[in-house]
Amino acid sequence: MPEKLLSRFSRASFTLPHLRLLSPQASLSLRSLHNFIAPTSQRSPFTLSRSVAAATAMDSSSSTPCKLVLCGKSSAENEIAKSLMNNNTLKLPDNVQVSTLLHSEIINKQQRQDEESFCIERFMNSLSTNQFGRLLVWSPILPSTHDIVSNNFGELPIGTVCVADVQYKGRGRSKNVWESPAGCLMFSFTIQMEDGRVVPLLQYVVSLAVTEAIKDVCDKNGLPRIDVRIKWPNDLYLNGLKVGGILSTSTYKSKKFNVSTGFQTLEELYYKTWLHSGQRVIIQEKNENQVVENVVTIQGLTSSGYLLAIGEDNQMCELHPDGNSFDFFKGLVRRKLE
View 1 (cartoon, rainbow, N blue to C red):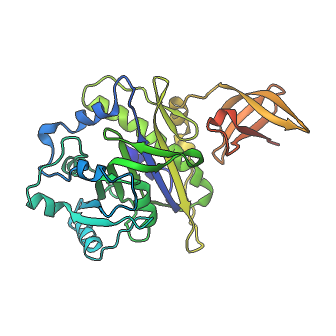
View 2 (view 1 turned 135 degrees about the vertical axis):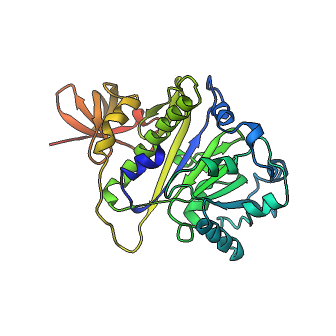
View 3 (view 1 turned 30 degrees about the horizontal axis):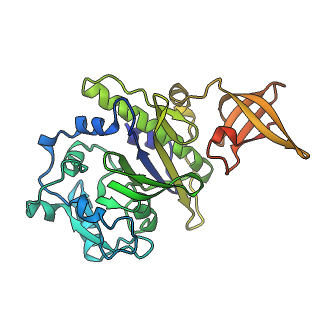
């Protein structure tokens, strides 16, 4: 489901989405969902213990290297994985050391997998995509999965996915740090797009793909649906609690963009999933030396991916985050539309 939605979107400039699913207080946690997907009896017979690395994980200058396990869906991706390992290609910022292994080598050594770890074999056996996830980078513990894909973008095939069991230096809004313990689903992937103008919409496509994938997993396993909802622009909520977030960054290279499709075909489904249709928001605006509060009602998204709203004066406007407020809806800036 996620790849189908992404392929309907576009392929452009250079965008690196990062997804975190966090649910320590949810009525049905995503750890429980993970257990439904990967029961212990079907997990692969190897381990790279998190506990060894955890003692020094918070110190990025530690001499203990981050262990990366590479695995491909086909022989072609496995050859790429072997090349990455042999050439010691993958790097992390802040001089964090990296130790790279092949999944096949670990299986041959008959090491046992930690029961709480991401199940590589089950993931590969279930994968039916043409691009996304066919080369997998897994680690028991990382500063950030985003660091792997962003620092090695030119070396990794498009669609490469990096997964970590524990993450201790993830990035949040306003330079907040996300420390994600075991039980969270954290992954980053690379994608190329063709139209730089629609890059901001990618986080909406990924948000929608995740909610649809969770529904799909529940349906296939005979479970009650988990009603995960989208909070604009990049948060996932369950029963009023934040359980996930999407970080999307991009770089520009080679001075070229190609032309592609847009977000319009997914808008109807997106609006069924998000929390904001008809929501009334108080906008604080400066008028000379005074702060004036105005009420607007959210109507949807503009073509550029910001919020479309209507004011009490029936004036249509576009709402932008001010870049400072932790709560987007307390720090929105209104721009009137002609």
